[in-house]
Length: 266
Image (cartoon, rainbow, N blue to C red; front, side, top):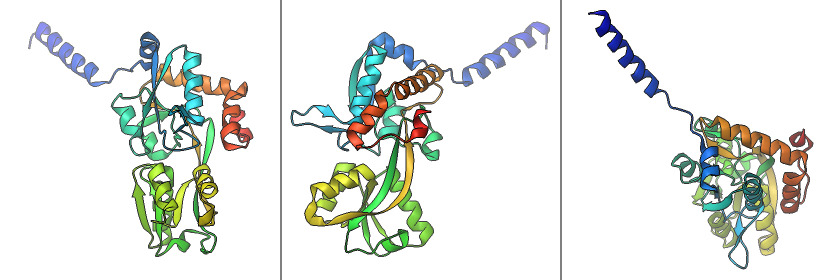
């Protein structure tokens, strides 16, 4: 092989190697150029996301998304999602970010990135007061309603398996359908976020339900695609700044009637 031929071959190999490495995207620049941010939000999951009497989106996730768009100086477009399709919508570029009661989990971190956490989501088991349920073993032989793909689903599945409890997990496509299933008596036991369980209990006093135990508590953050260093840096700083100035804490207290844990503001 001549020196010239070798050099050409080496350049071809280098070019192939370079193109095999995915270039970092710059969604932040794209958002600013478009003057719009597309945020995935589940608007069937109060108090995080819901429709008011005028069919306008409201809730803690909506207020958080509005604050982000305002600080970016762009228009907010809400992309409705369910618990199960939040990650796919992000990965297929249907949304720029996810702000949708989005708990940080190790499984999700394999395929997406998160901002710095800005809230906390406890997931619990709720059931009629007459039911004797203090831990996963108490679910043996019982049917439990849960929204598919949520952290409640993850924790419920894991905990009953570890406990060897033969629970019948009935998975619904979104939080609203799971809530309705329990409210209408299709299932008596509910797995979900603490705020959702409390709302279900408050709105259906005839069910005589109470929270039985907490399965876990997850930090909540903004979801973004991997390999987005500029956007991640912006979101991390944005969360930190709005925790320090009290705006994110104010949203949390408005909708969840309690202060953020002190460690989030540090």
